[in-house]
Length: 159
Image (cartoon, rainbow, N blue to C red):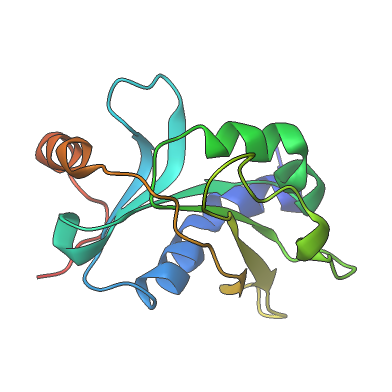
C-alpha cells in the first residue's frame, strides 16, 4: 500500500524540525514521541530540553498542514501542556499565512506558540525553518524536567 505524500511527510519532519531547534538551543536533549509530563496519556511529537537536560522545555507538535495546526482546538490543546516554549510544525503552505492573526497566544499571561515550516526540495530532502519564533511561557518545571530526564532516553543528545 502506497501512502500519500502528505502521510509520508509527517513522520519525516521529526529530524529537520529537531535540527532547526538544535541550532537555536544550547546542547539540548531531544526526545521523539514522548509523554510529557510523564503522567500525561498523550504523546508529544518532540520534547527538547535545553542545557543538556537541565534547562527550558520546548514541546513540538507536528501537523499535516497549516489548517490543522492553526485551528483553535489544536492551539488551545497545545497551550494546556506545561512548557517554557511551544511549537507547531507543518509543511509550508502554498499561500503565505499571516501568523499575527492566528490563535497562538494563551488567554492570559505570557507566551506565544512558535511556527516551524517544513519544505521539501526538488530532490525530496526536507528542511525546516522557524518562521514565527516562540515566546516564553512562564512555567517552573525543574522537578518535572529532572524526573523526565531520569526516566527517558533521548533520541538525540550531545556530550
